[in-house]
Image: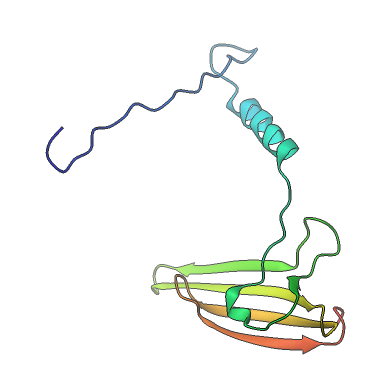
Length: 125
């Protein structure tokens, strides 16, 4: 290898069984099998409240049903305008105050951005 260039290591090849119709492997069937295998062993983990929230206490992203956390991260990319923005919403439950807070963060991708906390007495508000 030349100085400063790492040698290319061969990657492991995945062998797919040929489809019943002919010689080409059934990539879609293999992908479904892998997805089912991974989902069967995956365990949902709680999404943490973003570090910018900044309030002390027992704060958690609200989750009524396991795996359905009230957390959304949206991206807006417009290459013509050179815009790469994010919008992050979390419904936070502050257990020590029995208070729901809509935590909203927005800004340029790669930055912390700006944020606001909007309190509400119930999650329906």
